[in-house]
Length: 260
Ligand code: COA
Image 1 (cartoon, rainbow, N blue to C red):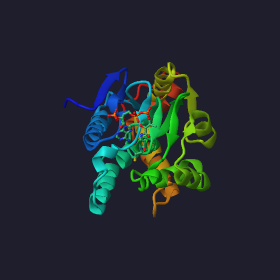
Image 2 (cartoon, rainbow, N blue to C red):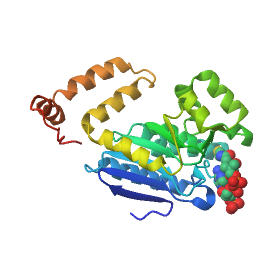
Image 3 (cartoon, rainbow, N blue to C red):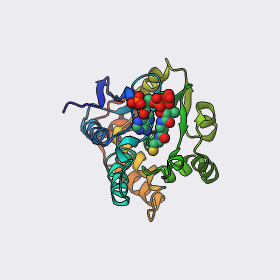
Image 4 (cartoon, rainbow, N blue to C red):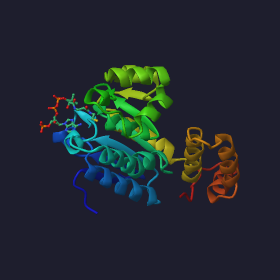
């Protein structure tokens, strides 16, 4: 499939998905949501891809939000559908992907843009990045999971304040809050994320997928994360990756995981 709003590249077991609507600061329209779903699905199914890095085109924005021009005249029913479809196709989909996804936040990450970064498994931002959930300034609330994931990441009180004030924070405050894991210079953002991706790619993709599932289980209603961990831990012993990982250790060589 050829994409209009995103670019999907692949090198050395790492896929890079770049949201590419620089004239609109990479705002997420419905077509971009559909293309993102497709690209993440392709990357996840590809046995040769161990990590995905998600970033935005240009020097100004990761993603400046959902495309406001698209939903400005929506009805309540259409608004609900926008939120539910987006969550299913991209936000929940990315969070639950077995392949690790790193958000490389290269500028504004606002509204749906910050929600997208929060759906990724972890986040790295460049020092020019600004983050916020400004939806209440438009008369709506975050609809792509922001009211749930922001408190999970930074705590309820801080999330309440950020959402109510609609203000932006810079990368250093985001680091202090635990919203992002690292701050880099603009030039070093992608090389830094690629270094992390290489470290991740050395490990068992099957075990990593099981770890993602177990960690996410802690945040799912009605699911006991410890039970999921017990199950996933047990399953690990029946995998070829486990046989290879333990044999390689005992034989004092580098593991070559058969993988996903
Ligand atoms: N939806 C649709 N278009 C958007 C957009 C969004 N979320 N964010 C930016 N754009 C468009 C602008 O309309 C403008 O398009 P135009 O040149 O055709 O008029 C273009 O991107 C550049 O943005 P501009 O506002 O001129 O850049 P700026 O540097 O002055 O301001 C921001 C940058 C991020 C502060 C500002 O664009 C902004 O506030 N965007 C909306 C953020 C938001 O509320 N997101 C949550 C949506 S739920």
